[in-house]
Image (cartoon, rainbow over all chains, first blue to last red):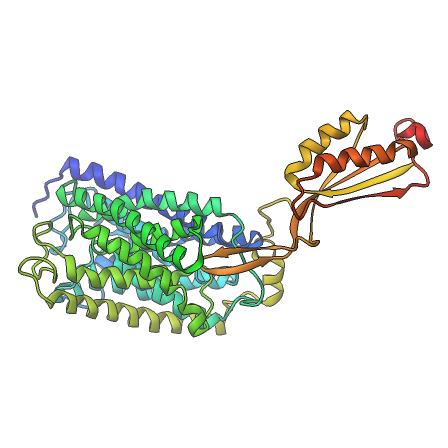
Length: 416
Length: 112
């Protein structure tokens, strides 16, 4: 096989890998600020531990399940790359990935950072009430049974991509996937003790704003890195990753101000993250003013989706459903309005609002989003049920009262 | 001897300390406390969910003074702590039976 390493592309992907890796500690602070002070270390631990466990698991088997070239446009990859076999500093024998101009081991490392943060996103929904051993088991099994197949179907040459669905950086693979899993797990473990009667306000919003900044910074690598090259598409993706969260912040704050009377700091941070989520599937496929429309819409829609948990009576502690599931669905589907072949030649069915466009893409997007949602929800529900029945997943009432930091980790974050 | 206890707004602490030093006070004990009076609590909103915070943060000051100084010090404290808005707090005087300076063993007014 011919492999021509491009040093410009390689340099950008080295950088992007580091950027995305930084997002998980950023997420830890985004979430950590929103929980109560007695549970902040447990939240930071769940996120930092995901880095430890999932990086190793990715190398052992999940990279192969996601990107092993089964060659059948199917459901899951083969085991060609298990234990990093043939994952080296040159190219790859995989037909599907033969376009890469970066070392194959760098592609593996870059994708690994996505596999780390995706299960970590779930921890916002389950905040304040997960046992540590149950959590660790859940994310390990989930990475194998849910993330691997979904990443293969959408990113790794599987059938959803083959059908024509588009997902630039993980609207389905990351956000719908994690959001649906979050919904399944919270239905299994139930509400936090005391919810909704006891007040559970955030304990440190400066952490949350700091985390938002880190996430946004890292998201540049997440979206612009998904071009897998230092090219015009990467540049467009970077621009979109600045504009959409900005517009989403405005959309969220506008609705918040109209409905509640105040524009809040937490609202600005949450709106920006909703915009990052929504632009993720679209980042390298849309241009011009489209990221502003997508972001503004996502900010408003995700704010309104906050009401879902009260309406349906589930306890999504930090609103992962409203921000990641709804934001991911919103972005994935509106891509069918704005996808533009002038930005990216991969777009063969232009969006509804683009010259020569039609509704073909939007249908594919709905199918891909729906399949991801249903698959992730069902399998996550089963995994969570089995863990709950065996080693236990929900922290008991006393552990929740004392706080997870002390009861699970024998530590406290603050001196009083 | 008297014990003066005051509960004041936290941002008034510096002004009160300066006023008390000006009135000849040699020492005081300051504690962060929470509670409610007529001011009651306030409402906070996070992602559209409203929380009523019943206990408001306040500062409690305690100081020991001679019988004859108590009235003047309380007036100085109250003047410094006053904003004329609800929540300014309270100050009160309690009789103290015995006081000892731990370092020297001095007792009574000598120990103040």
